[in-house]
Length: 329
View (tube, rainbow, N blue to C red):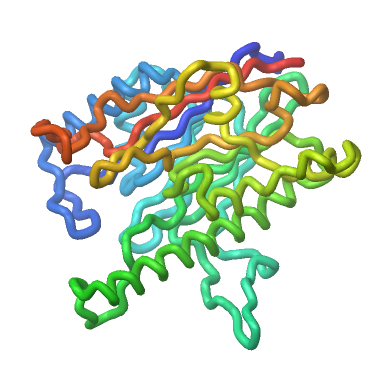
C-alpha cells in the first residue's frame, strides 16, 4: 500500500454512549429522542474532526457507535474494533480507515508491573477498563501500533457501608482512585516498553488519561526525559523509551495555548491526550513522520461556575483532540 502524505489521529470520549432505554451506571436511560440527538451530535463532531484513526472511550454499546459512524457518512469501510464488554462498565474502541493488521486486548497487568513495598505489594492487578492496541499499516512497509486507553477517573472508590459524606472517607476513596490510576499507568508503561525499547518502532497512545500531561501518573506513562548534561549516546537510549505529548510538540510551533479538554468545578483541565513515540518527532532524523498540527474541539464545554448555560444531555463533557501527522521524512 502506498503511504498517504497526511495522517490524522483523534481521541473522543463520547460520554456514556448507550442505546436508548438501556441502563448505564446509575443514570436514567436515554429516551429515543435524546439518543438520536446524541448520535447526530457525535456524527457532526466526527465530520469536523475527519480523522483517519479514532480512539473512543465510554462506549457502552458498540451498535450505538456504529450508528454514529454510519450517520457521519465518513466511515463506511472503516474497521471498528473494541474489547468485549464485561460487566456493566463501558469499553474503549478503535476505528481505522487504514488497514488493520492485528489487535490485542489487555485486561490484566503484566507480572513485571507489580508494585512492591517493604514487606508487601500493591494488590491491584487489572485495568479498570481494558486497554486496546491495534497494529495499523501506514503504507510503504511502515507499521504503527496505536493504543486506546481510559485510565481510572478521580472519582473516589468507596468501601461498602461507609459514610460517603464523611470527609476522611472521601479522602481515602480519592487515594484508592489515585492508586488504581497510578498502577494502571505503570502497567501500561510496562506493556509499552515491549514496543518502544530498542525497536525504532512508531507508537501512538491516545485516550482519556484522567490527568494533566504533567501529573505524576502521566509522567509514569511518558517516561522521564534525559538531563541536558547527559552525553548524546546516553540521551539516545533514553529517547527511545519516551512518549511525547502532541500538545507540547505543537506548542513549540505556536504562540498560544488554549488546550483544555474538560471543565470540572471551574478548573480547566487537559485530561484527553495523544502521545507519540520519537518516530513522529520533527527533531528525530530517523522519523517516519512529524506532528504538524493539533486541533481541539472544546467550544461545547461550559464552565457552570461562571455561566447560566448548561451542556445539553446529548453532548460529551470532554473535548475532542486531533493530531495531524505529516508522514515521510
